[in-house]
Image 1: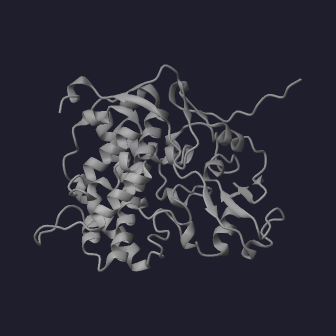
Image 2 (image 1 turned 45 degrees about the horizontal axis):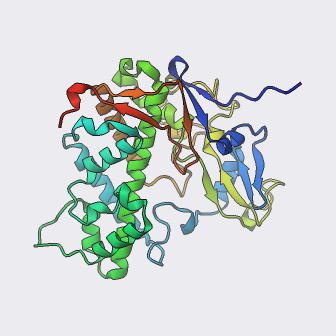
Image 3 (image 1 turned 120 degrees about the horizontal axis):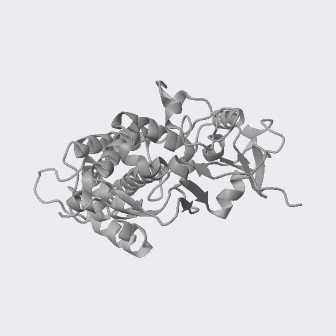
Length: 359
């Protein structure tokens, strides 16, 4: 007699469910918290062991996402810090402006939301800088190289500042090498923030189910934290191998790379009651969600998301715009499929109310 398959789908509101790519599905059915993915990689979802791996050594430059080496050289700490501060000021300035017309949220999510955020936050940047994070450009290596070359020799007219502070860092770079690094940082920073927030809000809208418009605004923050638990966009974190991990676990060899899985850890019944249930109320009264055991929505110490202080507030603003304009998800089924991507995000077609569809 065939054994029943373990339940791995997440039950959202009103029986809306989430299904996964077969490779992710295979991970979700693991019955151990330490497992071999292939000959050179060990997967870990055990909270104490993940903490021990993270504490074993500082994160390497190559293991970072935005601040990994660019233009053939490491990103200096001062340059990374300036970029973080610039992006923070750009986002705060952007969200103080009126949002773009809501009809731009209609279309395929999360891509429509990504484009909307880029328009909202970075549309003041002049050509060719504004093309750096354009989806049609970033999906083509050839177009990316052409735009990069154009921005490298970008002549700004006059002495007045133009666009965002991130764009200013490109123009103010002291030499070609620094300018190329500033270009890489602009593209990575704007894309990472926009893509991550769009994925988070898309996941939240789906998990809230058909009664999403009835959820009070006061509960939206809890909805987003629970979404980060159930469907963390950064669902896997990579660490290179080495002798520093010797003795942490008998299955980890010095030559093994290590994959840390927040997606699996966030479902551990040792730490979460009803882990497959979407329950925003579990965050009621939680003063600092990031201090919750077995919860890693923005990475780990030494490699936390550099924009984590922006993600939830910006996602809450985008969620308000979508719901205020009666965004409707068009899906013939109550279960959506999540493909294997670096960001974990549902896919669906959506449309705002007719009253918001005109520019």
